[in-house]
Length: 104
Image (cartoon, rainbow, N blue to C red; front, side):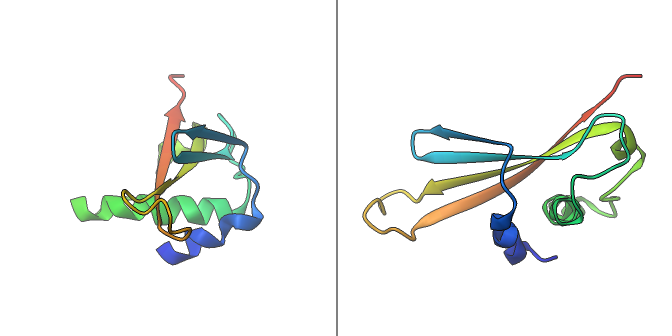
């Protein structure tokens, strides 16, 4: 999966959507805490694409031992580009991966 393919996740319904000003946050739950099961292979692959930005810091594993017991989310933020309110296709999109690791 490549970065451009993140836009193809439109068939997967987000778990939550929040709107703050002109930003729309779509939250996808990718994996439950203390479970080795991922919600879908597509979402798991999306996490790998988002985490690939870590590679600029060197050889970093995109999936590690902490993922086994973590709860993992993806967040897509869409927002209108400044000064382009009248152009319907002038928006930017950012993706974030967040994981919560159990302390036990």
